[in-house]
Image 1 (tube, helix red, strand yellow):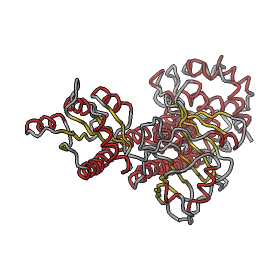
Image 2 (cartoon, rainbow, N blue to C red):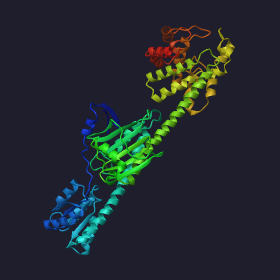
Image 3 (cartoon, helix red, strand yellow):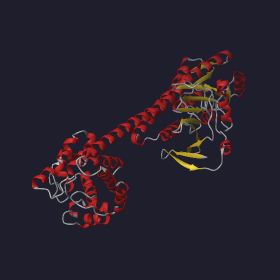
Image 4 (cartoon, rainbow, N blue to C red):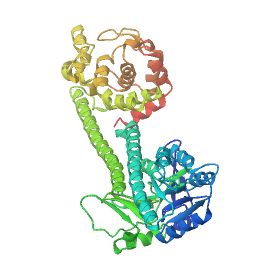
Length: 538
């Protein structure tokens, strides 16, 4: 069984192997689901008989009653329980109802809980004092059952609307932060769709019991490269989110749709025939769906199960927003990768054209790109630099397109005039490549790969750091391969002799021609150069 654990501290999922089969998964029961079926009302009164009277009115109406006989007990009860409404007597010893109400409304976690003051006081100043303390309503004693129930029903509805508004605001902030994090870490060239889904689930799944607006379990189904569905279950356990692979697919009895759809259902609907096989299969894994929000499509489906309240269209919209963000990034990544592939193909085509008048088959330019990437990696350059130089170094000799074949294939020593023409190919290459930002590195390499560290190179006699790093790297890559290759005017050298020339010199090629740091990097990876040459010399 595959288990993947998401760590909040790092934001990453880590794979772990786990022995066993579906039976082990089945044995992991869904503990901690606390769907609150009844609104909880805290009744505070120092007269037990008054509490008993209210309890007799409220319990038959489906309310759960908590009792407190003084202000201190009331504050403790409301701090330890999820209370929906407080019926609060005014006249109590020590802490009176006004002070208890002020403390409730002064606590940011509790201030949205409606407080109804039960009072026999009728003076206007007492009601003003209660309003100033934050009370939502007053009921005069002796209590009328019909009035009490009507006021409670109205205030609970008002609290539900307020909670929904607060939750919507919190969710907007959470979605904004998730979106910001996704954008910050988005790497289109290394986009991992499954990892993105992991990250989203790690953000939305319930990690604390009071997160009533987040699902306890998330199921994901995605179509893989073999056109088969992979199913995963996510659940928060202690300190991390676990992703476990289902041993078999789960069927949802919905007609296949060309387009995606959003679904949200509460428990009564889940008991119908549409979800019968789906629910039965989940129960086989000790998952009992009580509500569900889902995004369903032929390629990807996400099921968020068991919110600690009834789900609504708003929950579906939240899930849809997250899925759309991820699918958009996947589409963007695919387009960028397609553009990158086209860019690489264009570069290789132009590089091959640069060899048309030369006797080489085109493998020279390919090898120079591979050598350059090896050196860049050895120099601890970022992956983006390594990838760029691997491709763009292929254009180092593109200017040879304009060099006559009679010069390129001259078996004798070049005349002064021919040598002048040959030395123009860096300038011509830079001109061919042009000024597009995407080709900045290629242009720099084409223009400077014959410059030397000691300033004796061409076309401009640049020296040391005046030569861009990519030019210094390509210089060694180009000369290593040129020495190794047989040309019409020279024999081929083996790897050992080529390294000897580069590191000790032969009069024509000398170590002082190269950046000593880049030359040292070459010296430390001679074997890799030989491997590249042997693998790309057919």
